[in-house]
Length: 302
Length: 302
Image (cartoon, rainbow over all chains, first blue to last red; front, side, top):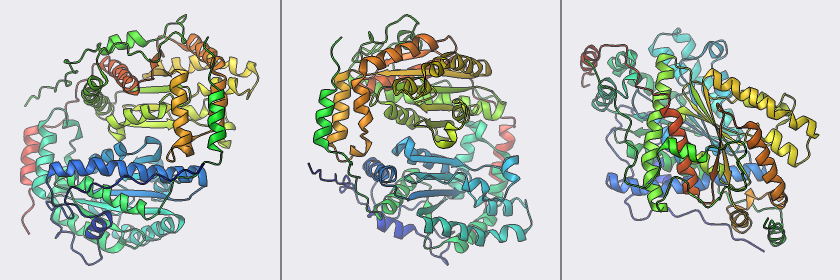
């Protein structure tokens, strides 16, 4: 009995949107591009309304889920050694947490691993800066999602003066070598830099100050960091220039409109997974014989 | 400036459903109850249609998410030492994985930790049976979800003859002491036993045999386990009788209708969290002064 592998469900055709590979091409950072010139209000590759975006998103979620499950199944059954690592960076309130929630919600919980990297714990700080990152790499078949990452070992260290320039400036190369090793070993590295406008950030930080259910998220340092807006812009630009590589590209994603940034990152992930061209694994059993066993196993009524 | 703590959003009032504490009371197992007598088709506490169930579910998800975030915020800001551990057991194809996905989707990814316990790895098997379980206990403020658990160290071991009775029979008491320690330390333990009918299981296992996208999930042992239906019923009954305790109750949840089991478990979790009576933590800052700082931080147009 031959079973035809199911097709990946179709991408939404009735909304004005670019194909996954086109979205990736539109947002992929090329060294020399200007980070500051990316308009945080823009919606590259999507010319519809927010309502169109929601429709497209819900269909794309099913596609992403299907592709992820193929990856998981092939790792489980065929020993396929591939995984995806999605690294998310951006200013305070750029929507990193919401994006993580969105991606996770679309996937099977057993196929996704989330790690948030905050101020290093005493144990983490007692190690080489990539130690805690290595420990959270996704297993084969999974999508790993990093909410902040080893890039804070450049960005936060530089901006908060936690170590001399000599220390953080050497890390661009160390990170490039690390990510190159991941890529060569089968981990597809996708790096997303969310970008918001100062006005949008002001709105979001104000929300945290005036809403009782958000006050606990307020941190005085968010406002100091905001006051150093231009210095952060420079630091982001340097990271993008120094660490955008073929096997570990950065995507600069406009994030004033949350629905857009989620749609765009979903398309970027779909594009990555589609390139693996995965079919469903065939079972190594005879379906007819197993169906007969199943019917014979019917318990007697007690 | 005094901010009134936001109220928890209201529970859906327009569908015929029991309150969270009533649902918990209806499904909580009392030693002496019969596991086999629970009708897997039933929907205790819910007299509406599946469509009503979907409406109720989407409102309940927002309530659960709000309560979980209060728990998380109080742990982060006030050092509150509480967490919730949801343990899910049930026969093959009872819907454990789907239930995990549902609960996770409703929550912030940083507030939930999922662990699936399969056949022990070599490292796990080289330790005391609770070793791997201790390592996956949720941190304060989080909801931990176990897809299978230390109960497999009784159930699977007993049913597959992996160790003599002396070994697994001692574990009821060991587990009771373990869970009592969790409860006394601030971890609210909620144990869910999903129950399906043999007919429903047959449908679901058949799906795995005939659908190309599900074949990889088929395991020959699922059918052998099914053939031992009555022996499993006895093993479940013994677990329920021996390990239902005030601080670590079992809930037997009918699971032929997936929408019902998800709704019921959501209500059980809401009931647990409501008992903590958590307000939003107050920020330890002066909102007016921080608002002024925020406005002063507006970056100059470059």
